[in-house]
Length: 336
Image 1 (cartoon, rainbow, N blue to C red):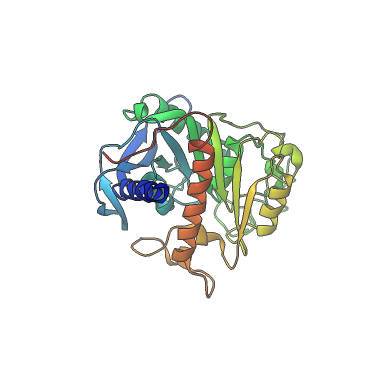
Image 2 (image 1 turned 135 degrees about the vertical axis):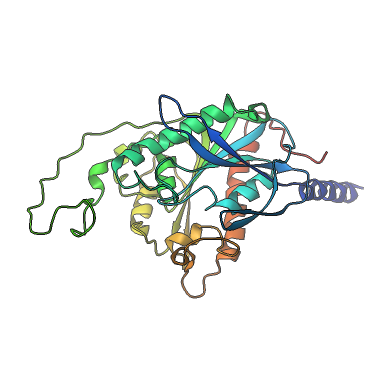
């Protein structure tokens, strides 16, 4: 009888899970005194089988504007990397939404694939954590979906500069003096000619950026780590953290810097190094996407689709552990 009960419970759970698909809609965090409006994509549990939705050349499995299934759901906010956008990490968003999370991925203003007008200065690195705070403010406040969210169960996932963003949100304070010079190529637009003497680089004072204690669990993949090379810069990161590194890095991200970061964190991170991966291996599979070809190149023998099935599952397990199975009760989505 006990075995039969267990099997029935397992089948019921599987049936409930099978009814869920990622509802998808596009939202906007309004402009306010702290910053401009923020465009975002929102995924949520849905009771309808997904179709294919095409968004600016990228095709994703989703149900547009599907009613949310469940109540008091955990929220995860996603931050893209340099020059990215809110669909770069859509497979992770779909996995979390299918499992009963509300997921909001944003386009960082003036620093995304459609608008890079302010992407190269320090201003965007200062602003990024504030973009996340404003998004959480909106989702827990003025959003028409706020009643579906448990404000005590907020998480974050970020890639590359998005990983940097998550570390700051979680309490880190960067040292921008560690960044390489902004004009390594003297022929680049806005750089002084090569025959002029290089200006003396002024030391920047320590900065305390926007932290958000409402975020209870953080996952970061190949974060911009060079600005966190001392234990002092990381001493206030106390939130549970899962940290991922590609073996070979790339695009300005060093696996050695990420490894150093892992050793400096005051709370031991759940640290993973992905063998044979490069930096862009953390982006969603390039099938049915409009990604530039250089973002789709992996090392020989690396299967991005197979890796993401494992990666998404491990990240989901981490968020479940810290946002669902923690103190209190979360009413995750169930079959209607």
